Image: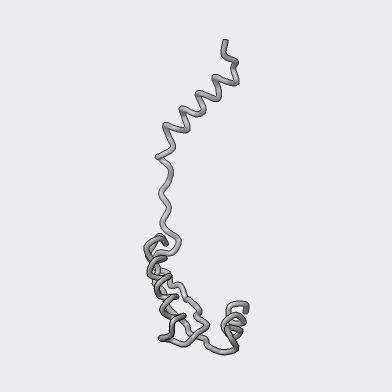
Length: 87
């Protein structure tokens, strides 16, 4: 004989499965926004090329297709850019 808690669990799971896809759709967070990428090297170097390669892949996987801008801050071995991000 099935206990009442088992029956309640099965009924609850059936209700959950029946209404799982009727949840409210959310708009992507990054829709219409701009993401600034701080790069600690000069423009045109190998570090810049690596950063642009990674960003081109990230564009595919971030929902809402945000706009990316690059802000170059060479100096101090990256300390200038780190201090900018920290502040």
